[in-house]
Length: 270
Image 1 (tube, rainbow, N blue to C red):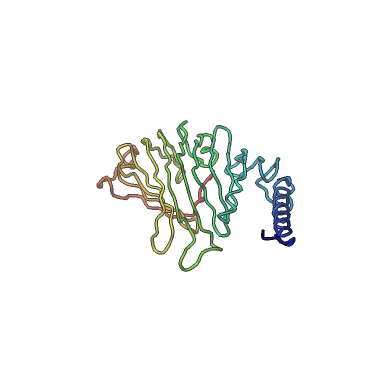
Image 2 (image 1 turned 90 degrees about the vertical axis):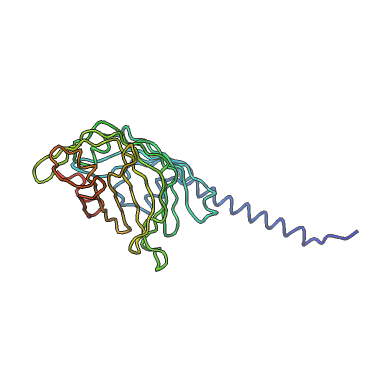
């Protein structure tokens, strides 16, 4: 019978010791307190008030300054270790702020981030904290929203910064909206609408396209967000006809309002 050398027995043992050492180190890292990691690598962040748990599973209280007050809430995460095989850090997350509830997956790569299967609802109180408008007491439903955004640091001539993937929809039953402009408040009765998300490439830019449709799938307008966080708004005659003071005449699919501004410009303006 063939004899097995002693060295052939030692190699597997050394390999298993190495595998065990790597797994032990990995689980030791995952058990590190999340608060200690935050203080170590982001000690001056003003948006996180309290962190509990560890890197594997934990929660945080966050605060975002908007308008004259602050929007606060909680975030819970549960790490998904198999995302490391794809070269990403991934976690299942749940975000809450008053009556707002969102849950899905967040993945962070070297030069990109993405959100997958984000669903839930955005409460009217949350919207009122962000936008200084008179809004109806109706939430926005978020249905399986997925986004992938390439950051500036990872952009190349072949892959521009911006949104490379987008899917899902937002739904809103609408109602009366009052928005301030030029010292006056203008009112429009927003119909029930659906916002379809997609990624588009235009003028060598990767854009997030939000297509606004009514219940009959008729076009109400379009929103575009580019890699520089600029927002382009285009509203049609069909939507503006819901404004009592509007007297314009045009085919219903004609864009009659076009605005370009930074994404967060005017939010919470007093």
